[in-house]
Image (cartoon, rainbow, N blue to C red; front, side, top):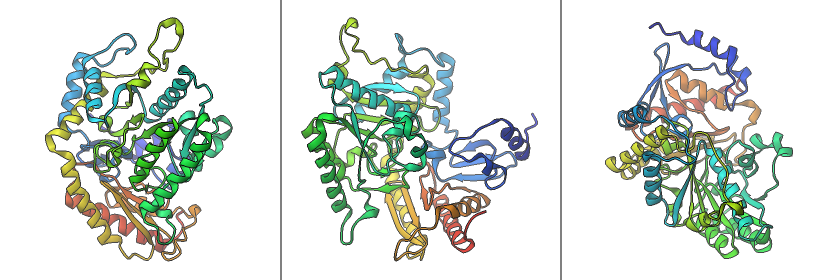
Length: 458
């Protein structure tokens, strides 16, 4: 079989495809598309034979490397038995097993699973479930949601409404429900002399004041535990989760934990909520759920919430949200295989060792850099905040697009980095080696020096 060249595939793509999260004009010259032919381990390969180390796990989904043989085998076996069937009125072994396993692994008290097909869809499910719960239980006035500044929960309209990154949200504001936004516990924004814990406590107190006066109107608080990933990988102290959980319980408000990006070992524990020893009322999972194989998400919730919808048909209390591919057997098989790898490899322990090396390598390359304001880490997520002036933390003008220098330089050196504005971050697959970690960090440092030296990107 004769495969196309990179150039041929780019031309075909640009004639017909509209890519996500992209100004398509950039792909004509500024950011040429990279056509991918195959992947293996932490490496991706294009049609001309060049390889790229996937330092960001292909948008944070890949846990065990591309084309992992165990997951490949599990999906292949399921493909021979049942690729898909409707999940309304039917069930199958992979979905039932996965739900049972997830409820065993999740924070205690989450024993019901509702499957959907994307991270944004899981947020829609949780928001609708919370709202509907209060309708079913005689509290119809509880219709509003509290979100954190700098938060991101997805691109569908409900998910977009409960996020607050203006880049994604501003243009669609007339279509969105009104929410209450409280300040993020972002440790980068600490006042002089404040510790991350101090910031978390101060911000939790501000949120509690909102609940104290408006709890009768509020259905739920939604947050990303420990790391606001799309919000420039900003991080906060776990005590914030504990204090918010306590406040939500005290004022009768649901807590929705969006662990779409941080779940499944990214932060050092299987779920980020574990680091504060809290159980949310809704836990949203996707991305690493299927280890980057197939689109699927799940919302875990409490039996008491499930029971509020459990009634006679004529009461019309059922939760009628649905997706054609809910509980897809192939996706469930991939997820089950991924969970087996966690057990067989003692992955959380191994990840802590990798995280130590990643943190050390990053500090070695970036500590003291005149354009680095902060290096922050939570497990296998490391972020480097670069600025125009280290002392004042003055940022580069976003219109200069200096991150493009880093992205393009990294590709030329065989590394896939995709900075978030003025933040370089690493979130690699769990099978990365020490040498590969050193390579991606060294290339990122080269890219930052180039970005500072060359100025605005074309």
